[in-house]
Image (cartoon, rainbow, N blue to C red):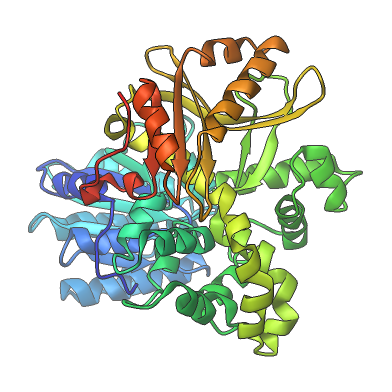
Length: 485
């Protein structure tokens, strides 16, 4: 990966390093989607661990390849016929470690599972009976999330034997921007909206490269690095067989279908809604899809689904509909006619998600108690008037927090505050009890273009009105939050 900066992952790095410095044997589990930075993280923890990348091939081939690479790493002569089982391979690793504390990494570990020769059971047998006073650290790493998570389950042979486990997830907007420090904050947000928080995608941006230039090169171009990866994203996920169903469901959600029945209908699965539900569950586990309900909704209320991966959302919103023109190298035309005029509208929901991340991560910098829950609300009041609230949440002290987000080029005026008050009053009168409490709670407004003088004056006069600009969403830069507390 072309990353020059080590972003986030500090806790994982320090904890893994501490494990390897222990005098006790330890087994660690690291997993997450492809391109989320697992291998890069492991490469930063130790200088010379034994590292083996399993392949999607036979167990016999993987065993032979591992022994060859282990021999090269250790300087020992190893013949595959001398170690005919995986139990003998693991026993060999414990013998190598006797001469000193060593770290062994088995990457894409899921490729060693599911065979007649039960690798996990053989590993467990060696671990329980032959580790003795070894100081070995064995790291099992993999990208098939559900398979790797199952290794921790109560019915797994490894249950109770793992000393450490972590699932790496994509970066949020803040850490994504730290990989692109030469960009303006607005450009960094645009790139987050297009590439999401996957470190591999973000590392494709060249240092000093601008937002439009980088997107045209890596995403709009059919030969671009991110374009090629997204094009084969579903097919590259092991365990997904009927990729056409997954693609159809993704397209349905990207087109604005939110509830299960309408997603199934748009995907051509109206007679097999259970298939659409299963597909959504798998993609939710992979952080491609997320589901949400209105704030205060009951447990029987239907879920609403959205694409959680910004890169996938951008792909289906802008790349997929223009693939014919892009294949003809009409990149500049697609940008000018189909992307640039719609980009700020697209960024509205991206900014809203980033705002929720801000509230959950930087509540102290905002001058707020811990934010317990943060969601949105959309629906009709008793007069059938459509209402949407961007921010509805509850603070740890029990108080309510509501607000609005504005990704625009114009400073926000006080009208946004008075409209929110009216909406809350109408919802309270419509039987939404939380809205009554929200009228006495905190109000927070996020604006990428800042606030008018009149809005600043309003916040100064009202103790529980907080204003947050785009700069304020990056508190590590030393910016002071604009708040009236």
